[in-house]
Each structure stands twice: as C-alpha cells, then as structure tokens.
Amino acid sequence: MRENHNTQASTKAVILVGGPSRGTRFRPLSLDVPKPLFEVAGHPIIHHCLKAVAKVPDVREVILVGYYDESVFRDFIKDASKEFPQLRILYLREYTALGTAGGLYHFRDAILKGKPERLLVLNADVCCSFPLGEMMRLFEEKDAEAVILGTRVSNDTATNFGCIVSDSHTKRVLHYVEKPESHISNLINCGVYLFATECIFPAIRSAIKRRTTRPRLLSYPSSDNLESSFVATGDDEDAEKSEVLRLEQDILSDLADSNRFFVHETKDFWRQIKSAGSAVPANALYLQKAFQAESPELTAPSATIVPPVYIHPTASIDPTAKLGPNVSIGPRVVVGAGARVKDSIVLEDSEIRHDACVMHSIIGWSSRVGAWARVEGTPIPVGSHSTSIVKQGIKVQSITILGKECGVGDEVRVQNCVCLPYKELKRDVSNEVIM
Ligand code: GTP
Image (cartoon, rainbow, N blue to C red; front, side, top):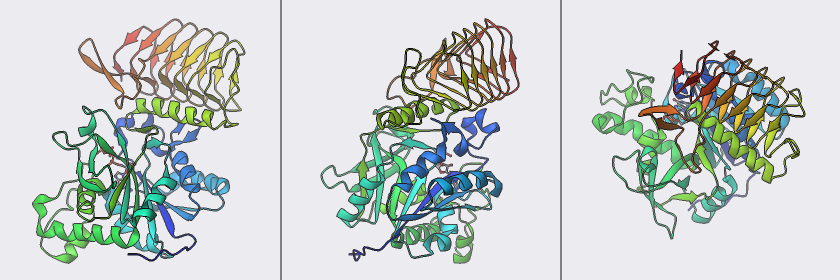
C-alpha cells in the first residue's frame, strides 16, 4: 500500500497528440491544420483537454507528446501558458511514431522528473467533460495502480472500441480487450487514464521484454508506424530499441491482471474526434457544455441567435441572419442578410452570402457560399458514434465538408459531400467526394 503523501504537484499530465501520419480520417481538414489544433467551440481540440487538466489542483506540468514538428505547437503553448500560468506546458517530440505507450516510455525520464506519483494520460482526439477529479478520487479511494475512464455505448458499436469487463460493485477492471471480435461488454475505453508512475513504466517495460520472448503474441502497429521495430532477437537491448507500443493493445489487458485497475464510468458526453465530420458533434457538445456553464464567450440568445452559438469577435454577422443552435463562427467570417446557419462550423475568413443556408456542415477557411445556396449534411442521430450514413446504397459522410478556399455558386445545392480544398462548385452535387 502506497503512503498517502499530501505532496504538492504529485501528478503530471501527458496529452498524446499523435503526428502528421495520424489524423488521415480527418482529411480534408487535416491537410491545412494539425488535428489537435483544429478549433471546435472556438478553441483548438487540445485546448479543451488542457482546460480540464488545469482544473486538477496538483498538476503543475503538462507534456504534449507527439511526432509533429517542434514548431507546430509553439504558438499554442505560448498562448496556453499565459492562460494557465500555474502550468508548465511543453512539447516533446518522438523521432517517429512510437505508439501511445512507446512515447510515454521514451520520455520516461522527463515525465518522472520531480518524482510525480501519478500520471494523467489523455488522448488528444476525444471530446468529453473529462471528469478528472472523480478519477483522482477513485484512484485514492481504491489505492489504485490505474484508473481508466469508461462510457457505455450501444451493444452493436462496442466492438469498434476498447472494451472493459468490470465488477460493477467494486469498479475493478477484470478484462480489457481492444476492439474484440465479438461482444464482451458495452463499457468502452474513453482514452483517458490515471496511472501510478511506479506501476505504468514497469508495465511498459515488461511488455517490451515480453515482445522479445513471445513476439508472435504482440500486436503490430499500424502500417504508418515503424515497420522494422518488431525484429525479435531475444536480446534485451534490441527489445529496448523497439519502442513501438500501444497502451490499448499491449498494456491495458495486463494491467487488468493486477487487482488494482479500476474504471470510472462517466454518464456525461463522450465522443471521439476521428473523421472530419466528427468535429460537428464535438463542437455541439462543447458548446452545450459552455452554455450550461453560462460561459461569457457565447453569444447571447435573441430572435436570431438560437443558443448555443459562438461568434469570434472579429466576425461580421448581418442582424437579419439566423444562427444556431450549435454553431461556431471563426475570425473575420462574414455572414450576409437572411442567411441561416445551423449545427455547423464556419472557419476563419470564409463568407456566407445573403439568403444562403448552411446546416450540418463545416465551411473551410476562406471559402465562399453563394447567395441562396444550400450546403447541408444529414443530422447525426443523438448518441451515435458514427458520422457516416448509407444513402442510395452508398456509404457517405453525414456532414458536408468544404476544404480550404472552396466556392459554392449562387443557388447551388451541396448535400452530403466532402470537397477537397480549392474547388469551385457550380452545379448541384450530392453524396460525392469532390477531388
Ligand atoms: P484507432 O482508434 O485504433 O483507429 O487509431 P487512431 O490512430 O485513430 O487512434 P489511437 O487510438 O491510436 O490514438 C489515440 C491518441 O493517441 C490520439 O490522440 C493519437 O493522436 C495519439 N497517438 C496515436 N499514436 C501515437 C504515437 O505514436 N505517438 C503519440 N505521441 N501519440 C499517438
């Protein structure tokens, strides 16, 4: 049993941000901005994670771990450090994709500096209310080695996620299986963890060692990861070198063998941000949360503003345009008279001309939607974790997305389309990827 030190700053946080080879499902938006910096509800996706971490009293340091270029997060870190002065925020770059556990292990010395007792790990690509305080309480109450955040999904979608079998009374994790072939549980991994530092690094090290002795039993990383990293020689030194490891496949199921791995089940919202279209439900959920919290960032409701709506102060909205619910309008956007925008994200410098209608869509940077044009997707059913639908026998994106600098002609209708950057749409289109 660990001693219950009441030390300051005994928890560190890591946000796993991935790298340029990740986020391919976020195209075409990730062609112009790294996914973690894409703005939903007026802030970059990772800002929402950071804001939650900043509320945990004993966290003083947050490390973004990824394999993007060093320059990518520089401005974000500068701004965030001003907003959260109590936090030291830094970015550590993996030389290549090391996997969700490999990156942690590679930077273990930096993470363990200052001897933190606990490590919060957040996947950057999740949207939720991050009940980190509740996870901390469960961790202390159970004297846990690890706590995972879980949520219930429908039985038919559960196998798309990491599944947790738990004892509902004690909250102990009994089994963990990443994307099982058949149904084992509808309680799934939310990608948010709290680990005892004295436990997680030895667990990763054991997995690395095991890889050399039982190479066939280990999961392979995705093709965009290191191809050569699983050359098993039985030699410990080689095992150390091959660091591609994933928490989900290689570590969590072993933690379940210990008696000190627990799950905190959230009843609040949770979504993954994988496809570009999934930014729309994430935007809606964060806006609704901000509205409940009476955030001053949101625009006050009126005859033409159906809350929640976020409008950047530099945007220009005609007073006869009607916006909302669930709308974010970026910097310098112009919305003309009589336009209607609903359940959408309108990115900076774009223009929606008079009497145009934009629904269930993302309008890319510097794009133009012509007068009387209609850009629309299909509403995603409440609680659904998918952003694709089947239309006329074809799987299409339910959210319409215009990439950067696209143009939609006057009176043109665009329905359930994904449009790559720099395209001009002069005729009606539906259910297409426009390349
Ligand atoms: P699937 O969910 O299995 O389809 O894969 P994914 O690549 O979409 O997500 P994954 O669960 O592998 O990643 C979870 C989080 O970890 C995301 O925020 C990723 O950006 C991040 N991530 C994934 N691989 C790496 C890696 O090699 N290094 C770092 N630092 N982060 C990673």
